[in-house]
Amino acid sequence: MAMGWVEYWLAAAGTWFTGFFPLAEIYVAVPVGIAAGLDPVSVVFWSVLGNFLPVPLIHYGYERMLRWAWLRRWLARLDSESVRAAVNRHGYWFVLVMTPWSGVWIMAVAAKALRMRASVLFWATFKSIAIYAIAITALIYTGLDWWTTG
Image (tube, rainbow, N blue to C red; front, side):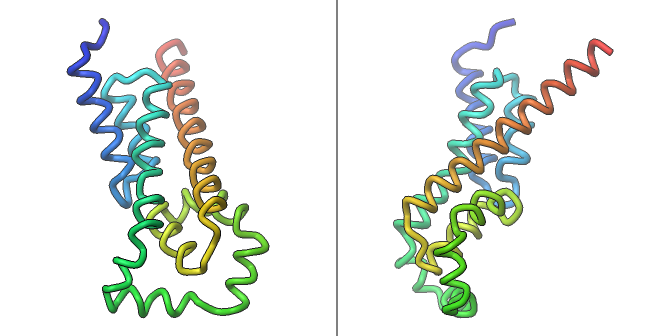
């Protein structure tokens, strides 16, 4: 049965919000989208969009976040010349691999604190999130197909 537009937008909004929500992120957003009845392309699109949105929000709201003393203290512990040099040398690959493991919120704040270029941060996090979303979606649909036909 085809999904109506109201049902589609409710499912899309739920998937988007789950991807945006810290701790749930892409690992929960994809199954939520699938359970809500979205097609695979919509699942990937809405979960990636929701999970990526914190990156520009943190990037452009970073100065405002520094008003919180506890966050300033935590970020000061990250700042060192050796860490900054490593980020500049290997930052793209580090962000690409570690974003799904650390979470996009923490990765964006840490990268901003270490003065990573915005273009590197944006592209690496987007690619990382998209790769994981596609992989999780494919694995779930393949598993569901195997389960129902096997």
